Image (cartoon, rainbow, N blue to C red; front, side, top):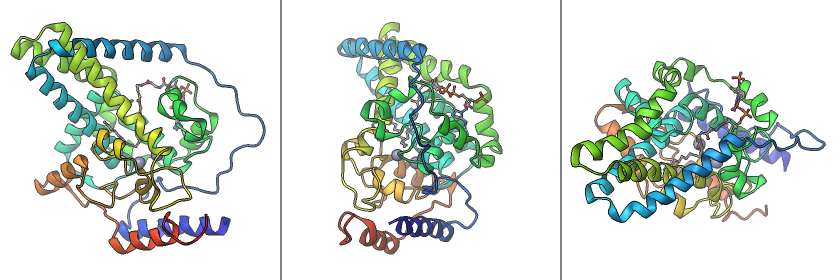
Length: 333
Ligand code: ST9
Ligand code: ZN
Ligand code: ZN
């Protein structure tokens, strides 16, 4: 089966080549990497993160308690903040910057970078670097949120311990020049902390308080902290749930799966078996805009002339791949 995997790997590279000759994004699974033999390095807890994450989730629970006293306008604003910050991750850090699955104009990149700071999930550069090692070394020691270490580690545990040395070793070898050359990415990285204070916490709190007289505590705990915590967990479910539960219609040899709950909460990012099979497809799904708000957003941006060159895998290639490696294929896995 090693030659089989090798052929698969080359096949994916060829498709990428056919889809975009110029692309050099390192997001295709690399089967040549082998985990080091011998005992694993000890898990080193990072107490600062454990404490901050616990406080955040406690505060989010308090936001839940305050929910009935929030005005309708504040609830609507919380939803708006959820969608903006989610787009900063899905359309921004993920589909644009990690995978280069479409091209975005300067104004769109500025919007996505601001939205990304509202999401406070590490700066775009760090997010995309970790995400490329996740695809390239998926489910191994060099995957930052290696799902073979269990649900909790893949979900949030990985943010509470020191990284496995292989994540850093392999990450340092990645091609990241496209990110370094993007002035919007580098600007956001330079001003990351300030942008998070203003956009993840400041703006969501200020708007309801200033424009419709919401109480400061409701404004801080609902569109601020509750929205942030829910959006984080929705994102983390892609790494945990969608690597554990669901179908594998495209490639039954890998762990990532199609998970409807994650599709819904992560505004279109739960078609994860498809996504790991064809990481450069801008829709991250076979089905275009179906249940996929992010794809609808990118289509709208293309329509408005703010984005272009979305990469899409053809129906024929998808069908051939499903036949060859999908759960419905006749080969025994
Ligand atoms: C958050 C991120 O939540 C969530 C990401 C989720 C990804 C999801 C993907 C799924 C698909 C997309 C779907 C999107 C759906 C969205 C839906 C929305 C509704 N390569 O990091 P350090 C270097 S963040 C190369 O300290 P430690 C690094 O540069 C939440 N190098 O490692 C540094 O070098 P130098 C808020 C790397 O000490 C050195 O190594 N944020 C790499 O092990 C040390 O780096 C937090 O909670 C790499 N890959 O600490 C903070 N990695 O020394 C979390 C590192 O030269 N982070 N390096 O500067 C931390 O506190 C720490 O990173 C740590 C590890 C404790 C986790
Ligand atoms: Zn994944
Ligand atoms: Zn991805």
